[in-house]
Each structure stands twice: as structure tokens, then as C-alpha cells.
Image (cartoon, rainbow, N blue to C red; front, side, top):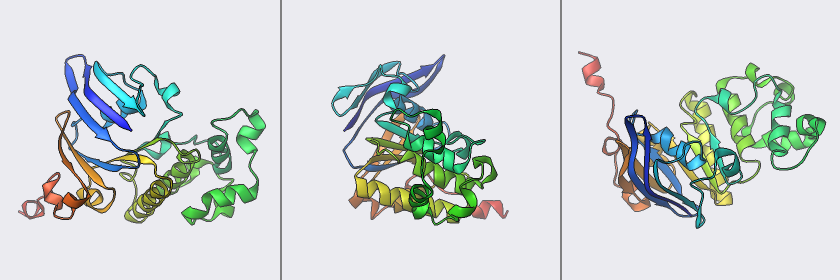
Length: 250
């Protein structure tokens, strides 16, 4: 479904991805774990078409899309960013953001594009989030908490089921309750619609709790891969290490 073949990405003298290769099957939910600077976000930039590899190929459904830019690739690859403010238009209302997401792949005039959904349609879209829709629909996105904004952004990103969904540390700025709700929604949606999904996280417990495969990214390469059976015998320390709480007390 997604084949990454000998991907190299270089920025000046900084060699970020180094002959990275990996294969993703349709319906996979792969969790990518790595330290800062390992190349995780650059990998997503490459899959999404924001960055063109210095060398190597990106193949989606048998088609070489290496030379397709981010806009042309947007029809098949959707990305949810770590920063909630990058996933929506802050000065527009929740209702307007949802409408824009619904009309994003069809022709629509400005009025329909911003206000073209009925209250019933909007409430149905937000129902899985268990939010007070009557209160927030007419609020600007900037007025919401980070958790609320990220949950709504996930709903927006999945209005048109993509072939590939990239979740770029989407819970990093969220409290545990909001993070749990978002990850549960992501798992339910991707499983139901068989969406091929890649999730970046620093949290090894998330990697052990969700998805069917784990990739360890180190120094620009995928150094380890674990399947569903492997995960049963893994510990958090096996993936990325842990905070040495004993050392903090010294």
C-alpha cells in the first residue's frame, strides 16, 4: 500500500533520513517511536509530499508519487499535526471549520463552504466527541481548549476517509483525558474504515497500547520493527527507554 524505498533527505549538510525503507500494508496502524532528531517529522513530511527526497521513492498503491507535491497528494494523504493551531482556522467558528472540511473536496461557493451545514449535520459530526455542541458550534476555534480543538480537528481530517492518515504526535499537548479520547476515536475510526494509519509518539505506553505494528526510528533509519505478536512480550523500556525517576530524587 505504502512503500518507502531507500529514502534519503538532506538539508544542507544535515543528512536526516538515511536509506530509509519500509513497507506498510493496507489497513495497518503503525506507531513510530523515536527520540528527538531521529527524523520522525521529516518522514511524515516526505510521505505527505511537503519534502521531496534527495534520493529514493515513495510508492502509494503501486504509483510513484515521489514528484507529487503536498497539494496534489492531499487527496490520498491526510495529516493531523501536534500543534492544534495548525489543524484549523482559529478565527473561524467551529461550525465554519467543520463546513470547510466537509466541502474540501468539492466545488462550493463561499457561503456553502463556510455555513452550508445544518445544525443536525453539525451535531452528528461532533456526536462521537461527546462535547456540548450547542455551546461551542458558534465559538471561534481559538476560544477552545487545546483538547477540544484537537478533537474537532480529528473530526475535520476524517470527513473524507483518506488512503493514509498521518497522526503527528497529536496528543503531545493534551491532558491525559483528552489524549485518551482522541486515541480511542482514532483507533475506532481507522479500524472501522480500514484506514492505513501512521502515528508518531514519544510515549512507549501508547505504542504498546494501540496499533498492530511498531517502528523504531533511530538516526534517520527504521532500526527495529515489531508486529502484533511481538508487542505482547515488549516493555516500554524496550522501545525508547524511560525517565530515571530515581536519579531525579538524588
